[in-house]
Image (tube, rainbow, N blue to C red):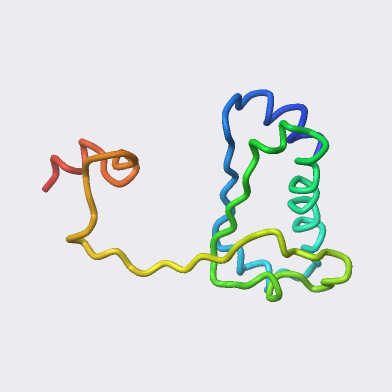
Length: 113
């Protein structure tokens, strides 16, 4: 928690999103990951006391619900997020122009076709 407050947030003057991909893998770990989720919950709770934490968002990506991830829900209630579902994007719907397109293709990859 102190690393976020003392190092990460001061170096990122705007909103900051931390992406954690394949979050469903935590189900197969041989140790409890409840403390990890408790830390995310603490960041959320700190928003009321510390405005800097209002700039911080966690995005957990994967195929699991909170009840799949938390072993002891009495210790770590994780009801602060919202679930989203996505459908596959067809090739015809993808765009190589507009906001964010630089993440999809680079000029070098376009010139190889």
